[in-house]
Length: 80
Image 1 (cartoon, rainbow, N blue to C red):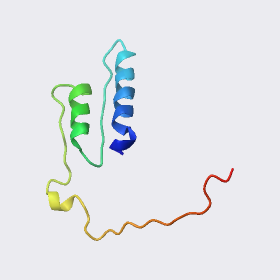
Image 2: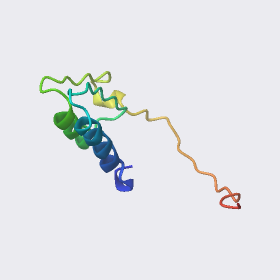
Image 3: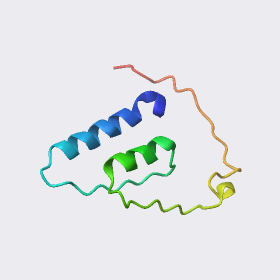
């Protein structure tokens, strides 16, 4: 997702919201994964005393080992 410009889009949206308000808005960020860029956004847009709540503190519990990812080629794309 980072290669698709997701970080830049989120940053642009938050910056626009922040700049359009006379009173500082309240931001709450939720993320299934907390990459370094998510923490950077938090530093830029949240109050200085923001808190990170990690519900899966143990690294081995964050990713299931028994999940299989598959893809299926769909021949029905862009036919309009």
